[in-house]
Image 1 (spheres, rainbow, N blue to C red):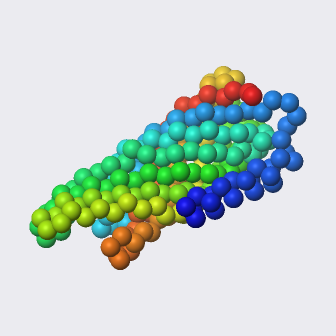
Image 2 (cartoon, one colour):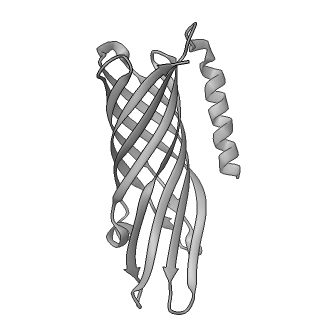
Image 3 (cartoon, rainbow, N blue to C red):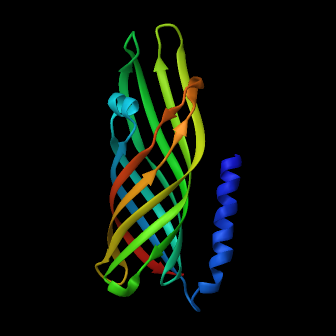
Length: 195
């Protein structure tokens, strides 16, 4: 709950800080759906569960030709593996809510490079079906992320994009620190509309 309140506060400050750049008249909004691959970088977790498919829908409001604010959700990662001395079945599920600021350079349109930074509220869930007792972890942890990519406008309202995103994340289930840091390789399609 505290992490959600922090994210809401930061998001509100981003809106207030950026209103000076809001163009007169209608504002542009981008609806985007990304999909791609999550690569975990920490060796023990990576060797057990490996990477996996993710998807990432989002909505962004363009406050100026150079800056947008974005809210999104990431999900889809669910991997299963046998772990431990008794090779007990387990699964790991990761998801995240995101709030961010996106800086883009429109000077090369239809190609628009961008960089992005923001906060995430990451959910991680692990179930271990032990011969002794079924153990479940289901928590959330706040972190930050950084991303960069390029957008290609195929017309005035349809665009495609490619993105690299990095999310550092360390969690502490069962009093043991587990590193779930990873990067995402994403591609997507979006629709721009005015409101």
